[in-house]
Each structure stands twice: as C-alpha cells, then as structure tokens.
Length: 221
Image (tube, rainbow, N blue to C red; front, side, top):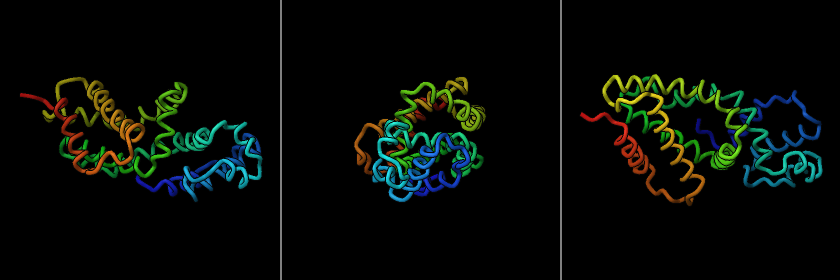
C-alpha cells in the first residue's frame, strides 16, 4: 500500500466506526482531526484548527489527548487493528510473493515496497514507531496482528528457500529475527534519526542493503 498520506487518512475516515462515541466532544475532535489531516496533512494541521473545526476549546483536545501525536494514535490504532489483514494482504500482493524465485528477489521487492510506503507516510511512521518503542502495552496489542498476518506468511517462505539451498541452515525463526532486526534498524535509523536527504540513489541503497543481509544469510558450500 503506497497511497499518499492524505489519501491514506481519507481511507481511515471512510473506515472509522463513528457509532462508537466515548463522549460527544471526543467524537467531534476525532472527526475534525481526520478531516483536517486528510485535507492539509498532519504536519500542516494545528490543534487550534482542529479545535475550531470541532467547535471545542483547544484545551479540550489537550485534556483528552495531551498531544497531537496522541490524537493521531487514537485514530490510527483502531484502524490498524481493523485493517491489518487487508494491509498485509495488499503488501504481499504488491511484491508478488508467490512469483519470486529467490530470497534475494524477495528482499529487494519487500524493502523497495516498504521504503516507498514509509516515504509517503513519514509523519505517521515516525509517530507510530516512537510510540511502539516506549509503549509496552501497545506492542502487546499489535503483536497478535503481526504474528497472524506477517510472520505466518514469511516463515513458510524462509523454509522454502532453505530447502532450495539458498539460505543458511538455521531455524526459520532465527533467520526471521535476524532479517527483521536489520530491516527495522535500517528503517528507524533512516526515517527517524538521519537527515531526510541522506540517500541520493534509492536503487543503489537497496542493492547495498540486500547484499549486506544476504552475505550473512546465504548458504555457503
């Protein structure tokens, strides 16, 4: 899924369950925030604008959500939990998982796909990752969705490429942990820590990353 951020937020708006109302003011704030984030983008929308659109005092937003980041999370998390299966399905369809003939080809397709997605949704990615890193409760909430929709697809694929003699003779779970450690470390450092213009040649960057990972994972005679 590589929709621009504004369209992604519009998709959230369409799938938000407006029948669940914690309070009338909270619902107004959430609906106003979704609308304005979709129209103007997250970074270009202020809490004062959201408050005006919702017809509430700006202090009401801070009382309920503390920060704009927390407000976005209150919108994102229900959407992620509801839509995670279809999101995962879309990713694996885009990279044509069943058609890939090598683990290296899989890595290239996956990394390229996720880089394009994160670049299109950088603000959302940064907020979500920072929250996951420091919020144990959130990690536990999202863990079942990751296991069911991502790990369950990747583990059999690792086994397949092990049988083909491409990968080192280690348990598939170990290979997956190594792979995810490298990929998440790369995405976090590039999109959360380093300057935005750090990469000049995207294709060459992906090639270097894939070669680096494959050097550790490929089976040697």
